[in-house]
Length: 310
Image (cartoon, rainbow, N blue to C red; front, top):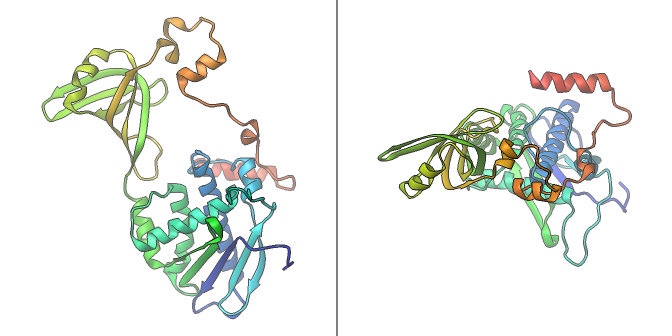
């Protein structure tokens, strides 16, 4: 390893099938694939993207977060990784670049699972950690993988993937998730039974969402029936899904007809006004670019996408 190349991630692999500075190729491939997947998923989550999806990762994330194996250390076999593309640090703020932030956050998530606290962890990252821990659960060759990486301010962060982490990741993945969310659509109906206040919002695309609310919103919901609204609150997502199953409303506000078409469909409006009404920000076109490497087999790449959609 060149002195100019510093590792950004170290994985120490322990187990009865791991020799000094040696590791079976199938185990090496599995560890590298799942570690890379976890880092990319974390970067997607940090960029506000969905992490459970078919198809390629955004080109910008691939560029910033692709790892290279630069050393297999002796003793308890240690795999050292660096970024394929060198990253810069903002000296004034000592801020980590996207890839380094993603690695640090993955390590923090693994540590959280091991400690049993309730740190919010992206479902895509959980999937990758769970997949990586599968080889630990079998215990035939590997029974523990220690992660170590630089953290903010020069401090190192460390955590271990073991059977406890696998059990807790599985429990998280099989349980519904709760997080802030909103739905835009027509407020179609409401039920004002005591202790069972419910309504239904029908979005322009997708199936209706059932919402619960308290008596403090009853009058407002009655006034807004049959109009286009935005309901916001605590959303319940089922395991392995990105669709809101139930929304506990905290606020509900009317949306102008223009937001969903209606009588203003043919009216001219500046793009800035449309963006303000829909609460969207400009996109970086680079993030929409494809991510097929120049030397990749396009047919095999497409086949992988189609298989993931089945």
